[in-house]
Image (cartoon, rainbow, N blue to C red; front, side):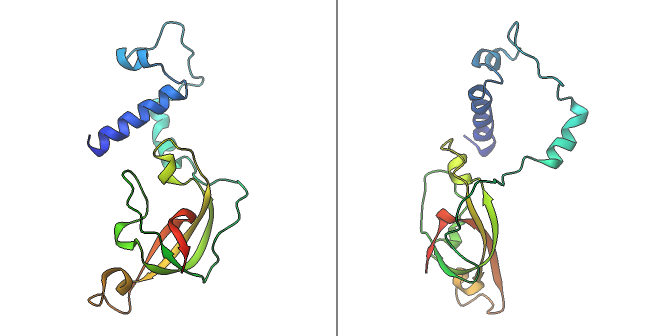
Length: 154
């Protein structure tokens, strides 16, 4: 399946799992007789504002950070079969924690319906040469937002 087909299938499964629609309704494309109506209904004119606002992925869950600003880290060298927010070019590389953004949903598990697994997200600074070798400028750096589970102490 293409990326968009996977997205559509995942969204449909979430709608069914959450009880917003039934599998029969998805199959027929019509609401079941006697199904509850959302009040107020989401109308087309309200969609742009809702999309612009988005749904926050931040969580107020108490979670102790595993790393601190200024700490050297190494990214894990993982190769999952599915989704990960850890770029391939940054796997197994050394960087420095520049900022702790707080606690957010971990997309690597959430995308696979394995739970939100909230954890700290850090802005990690990588020297460009760490990622791309000697041909990269020694003056350049790349910042990547990564979750606790992507990192280990250096």
